[in-house]
Image 1 (cartoon, rainbow over the protein chains, first blue to last red):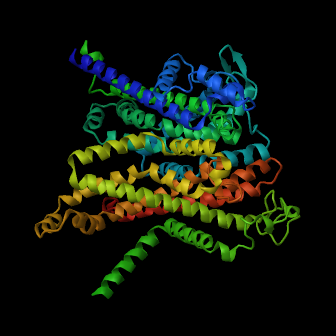
Image 2: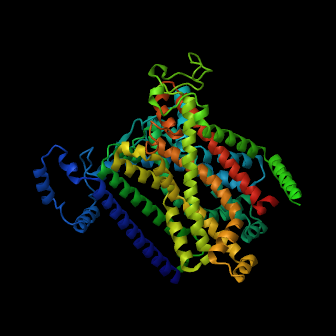
Image 3: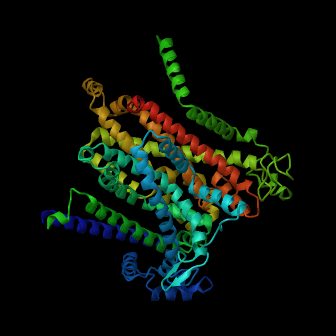
Amino acid sequence: MKAFASGLAFVARRLSQALLVMLAILVIAFAVRQSLGDPLREIMGQAVPESERAELRHELGLDAPWPAQLARYLGRAATGDLGTSIIYKRPTVDVVLAKFPASFELVFGASLIVLLLSLPGGVYCAVRPQSLGARLILGVSVLGISVPVFLTGIFLITVFSVWLHWLPAFGRGETIDLGVWQSGLLTLDGLEHLLLPALTLSSIMLPLFIRLVRSAMLDELGHDYVRTARAKGASPLRVWLVHALRNALLPLVAVGGLQIGTLIAYTLLTETVFQWPGMGFLFLEAVTRADIPLITTYLVLVGLLFVITNTLVDIVSLMLDPRVSLEGAR
Amino acid sequence: MSVGASETRTRALAGFAAARPGAVLAAVLLAVVAAAAALAPLIAPQNPFDLSSFDLLDAELPPVWQQSSDPRFLLGTDAQGRDLFSAILYGTRISLIVGILAVVIQAAIGVTLGLVAGYFGGRVDGLVTRLADIQLSLSTLMMAIIVMALFRAGLGGEALSRFAVPLLVLVIGLAEWPIFARTARAATLVEAAKDYVRAARAVGCSDLAIVHRHILPNILSPLVVIATTQVAGAVMAEAALSFLGLGMPVTKPSLGTLIRSGYDLMFAGDWWVTVLPGLVLVGVLISVNVLGDALRDGLDPRRRVR
């Protein structure tokens, strides 16, 4: 019971921290809007006489002191209203969220590749550290860390699109409308378009995760419980996968979760190379055209994603940690 | 006595080099690239920053080993008739300058804070560690992209291109100090407990003198290793920002800018404008990383045993 209560307290503390961080992000976004953007431009464009502007400014409360404006911005943000895009003339939240499926499917595809390759690869490198295969994997992973993600993309495009004409080089291809979600995962064309970008994005995370799995596994294999399990007669495969890997996953989740910001940055680069119509691509368009409301909305939503992931990672780490067993408390 | 010492050191270095041909190759490659970049104004046949020195009639010529090339342009030209060989020399120069200066800033902030935290401990230590954790949880590249994007949106592309070098150095430099701070702090904790530090304190050395003259020289080797790999990271970050159009402008291209401007031509078949600077960038990054790995193994006594 005590463990359960402390677990609950931990979750509550973590959630309130997350709320505080979100508040800070919103305040920063507000400051950026105040100093860089002119809200009137969102509404009426440039060609309106100054007297009319002043009138509207007063009507909208834009001449109010900044604390009042901040309070109103936060109030609107709480209802999901972060302003209107200058380029698209639509609510910025809608504009950014419409691009979310594209980015999500790209990250999903890349994560799948990373997961499918890094777990077996990392475990293999840990249980056969001296083998040729392990050295080869680690050698190639140094290469992977050294090549910037946009160059990996360009090289892949050069080989598979420009030279061999096997795979398309840009865009999402054919998508299917599932109501709120435009999916490219359900058509062959969509999957073909996804392959190169997903490979590119995974190429930068894969070396990191292989090394991570390897070092976590090496750590676990040195523990007494592994020797005990082996002495009981458990097969090596069972010892590696059921005993050691389960415990090795804990640092993996923690470190992997910390990479979310980096992942977003790499996604942005990948989307630029492949002209993938995701959130990062939209963000850069907003930057070149100085659409301040759209820029700040992207920052707030990415911040939200960052906060949610970090909070989830902390809570999942707590559940995976055998020392803090929540079920055991019943 | 000193002759004997230097001889041993030379022999140790030779042995180290013989055991790691890859590291030697990387060091040589890096030395050549760095020298070429430093001497760019003397070597380059053309000044790639001077728009009047190139001719649109020379645009999109392939490298000399391909058909319909021009012997004046060793590696071909880009869309504006700029000599790619000169552009790569100057671009590497900018990439290396930004990378190295950014790491100097990282090291200056990080090592200072790490020394202070490790030496004084207590509340200062707690504060520095906490700041480092927060800074590290925000991805460097993402922060750099956001800051440069806001500058670009706020000031416009024109103003950004004028201040691109100092901005990039500051943005990349300020973001990664915790890497240095953590290492410096951990090493300082170990050193501060040793007898020579206590002896120095006993003879009346000030804290500043102890940290600066006694501890700092003894924790330098792990810091050198980190500095090497950090340069690779900083060069990569600069290239990424320039590739996104948030770094060096087209009029003063770094390697990342060159890759970006060549990328649009690639589908027309002009692969060299993007692939050649890309290969130089990858070559530099791999060399620095291989060298960093070798230095780590060489300087860390625990790894040498294995």
